[in-house]
Image (cartoon, rainbow, N blue to C red):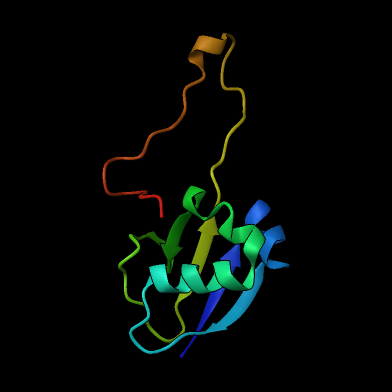
Length: 103
């Protein structure tokens, strides 16, 4: 079955573009897709543990089973930005438990 991988920031550079059509076996999980991508794209594999993954715009865990036509987003950590007059006002955003697991 075919799925579409979207990559952002350094993950885009690691796979050689922002979109990639990937053939995976029926019943493939996010984890098996990531392992396959890491094998085909070693630069991605070096930083795989830093990625957050979303399927069809929902954060997922590694065991999520993929379906034909799924859109998988590889989302590297995001940092930066200044939101206030004092450095103490800048806080890293945290996600509620279960909402943004790292794969």
